[in-house]
Image 1 (cartoon, rainbow over the protein chains, first blue to last red):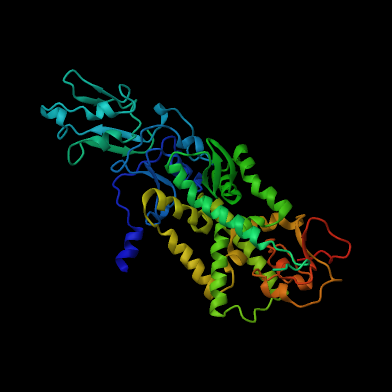
Image 2: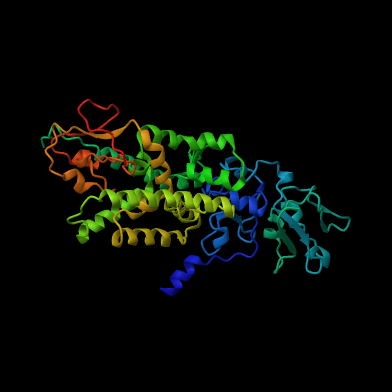
Length: 166
Length: 282
């Protein structure tokens, strides 16, 4: 019984991103009325609402890039009734920023792997390949959608993901 | 079965609408999951495609207070239920609200347990106190939202909790902590106060109650055909006393009293007939 109650409140996620176009953290907490429209409209089911265990964030939309990253389809900001998510273009989604950990990244270890480059929704703007075919993140272009983090084959991930607006 | 001509039968229609809304709240997440998104949303916010048609007015007011900015589109979509309340009273509560369904279930359980036996209508003093608690709770939580910058009512609102329960169940196959909030409210309504949430605390209902001050659709009593049997007082879950002409702002226009009236003295009507009671001051 006790375990059942614990499980109700337990959700495991490492990093949580906000959906694209979100206001800054306090602005989002102020404007979000926890209606779940963004969750319903998300075609990839990336967005989930924070459970009661995250009581200070309860009901606000989160994305766990370990389970499902954001593919930047930009449907959720359009349906938000209160403007907690603001309609913006992909390039201005501002969810966070990714970085490559070169000590574990396969491409930097004499192996050819460019999964992060191939899956990036902003290919060429957020990630490019240098002359050794190793991925390089462009800080100005990366919006932190978490796709590269999700797809990275190494364990632990060779991508560091920071949340928050730049 | 021969129906009594004098009796009204609103309850089947009300139940049908309640069931439809509840089924919609369960079905919409499923349909959205199957990429049929003509209608989206929960009772907090309903819309098609990218247009918001209805937004919860309490949520909208809180957002105005917390962000210190009034969005006109949001105001427009939030005014739907408010306009409804101005004309039809608190029909959102009794005909649409999903929490109301569960509250009525709690009431049924109370009946089974025999806790509603010999239920007296609230005395005017108690009635006034109940209204005061309701309004102070609405005002207090809106003030708290303004101070803290967080829409606090949404944390505890059971209407949103039920809708989120359905979304989480559909999308994540998981039951969240919302069920604990609902269980607390249900147990409190069964054990402490009859329909306590709707009557004393619900901020959404309180807002519609304020708006329904001069509603046109109202339960009206014709004293000439009333025989004073007191059935309406017995059945009213909100502690109103239609027999004594007290049909105030807590009335949700659920028409249970109208259905219970054997002589047809109570009517749910838009127009004030000549021989109906004086307007209640409460």
